Image (cartoon, rainbow, N blue to C red; front, side):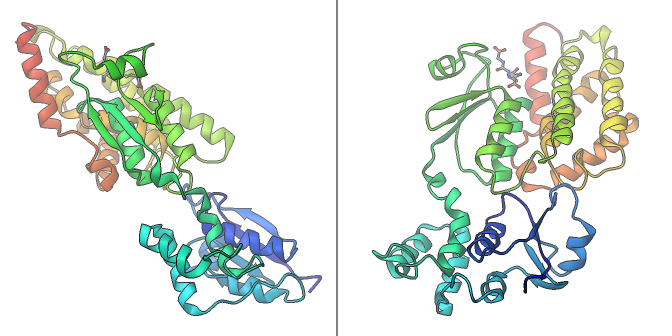
Length: 361
Ligand SMILES: N[C@@H](CCC(=O)N[C@@H](CS)C(=O)NCC(=O)O)C(=O)O
């Protein structure tokens, strides 16, 4: 056993991976931790070792593979050390259910399994404790109060909406009517810029959409990571995400142009969009590679404005940037995106009204 080779394919935020880490630590087993950037791409080793589910964690013990509910494997690996008590199958099923963290499941676990004992097995830390402990970081989050001050056509607001949807966070949406006046709450929560979106988490405001998306990624880190753990890739993602901010000004030049100027703003918008297409997206499905992430969220709100830019600019974005349009269509397949984006025709209608009021029509 001393010469055993133990490798753990894992992802740092995974509650399932945490189970294995805790079990191995309890058994004082040395092992090699191999971080999977599964959000970006799955390693050939993961695909080989877990060809069915293609998921972490995978415990590789002397080339024998144990997949998913591996706790039993690591429990039996070194029985001489800490004993991780076995529990009846009913509890096994219940702690699996705890991934949903429903109130019923929690109550059941608390009343039927834990009771007044210090640990699930009684006096000693054991199997069910390990099964559940990874979820500890999410428990309590359900009681969080999350409010979003937003304005429906805002591409910046859409970023925060998509990020919250990706994470499955429930929140109260408060519409600000920016055409009329700003609410006292907005002025109080964002006294510097007085702009939406503002994410209010347990009473504390987070302003600036990209800051809010990063905050969401850090707070609800157990699900759908938006930024990678690689510092250089994170820096690159932040660079391109910040670059997408410019599209608001480029687009505005198009829909605020007079009839005579129509089409004049095309180059202003298309050139940077082409640059983004060639330098950042390339032939990848998403900006970060295989998985939807930070830069996709930064740009996707503008996709719902493409129709407006095309209508007032009198050009086709698809003809100029086909990969960007294909990317937008791909993103729209995600529920988090399709439910969060505003209707492009509605945006265009509202801006037509705005133009009429401004005497531009
Ligand atoms: N950089 C900000 C931009 C936010 C922004 O421009 N919001 C607009 C709506 S799309 C707004 O609140 N405008 C009101 C104003 O300018 O007074 C962010 O990313 O959150």
